[in-house]
Image 1 (tube, rainbow, N blue to C red):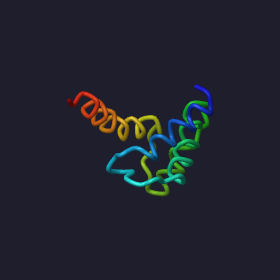
Image 2: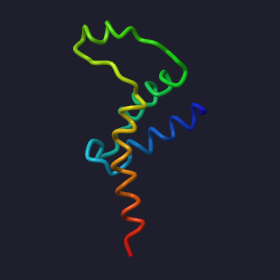
Image 3: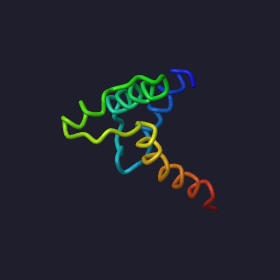
Image 4: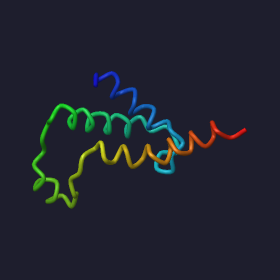
Length: 82
């Protein structure tokens, strides 16, 4: 996946009509894009460092999927409505 594709996906996510992201949030899109790029390119942050900050590490792709799934379902429902 190209970095441009990642950035575009993150901007679309930030603009999506999801409960978590009701308004445009370019900072969130940028942070998620950077994290997704790190996931895809294999950048590693030590899990213990994150846990020391009270953050339970998990893949950014998992969080993006969690946010996008309801948005995709809602979009499909809207497009299927007469």
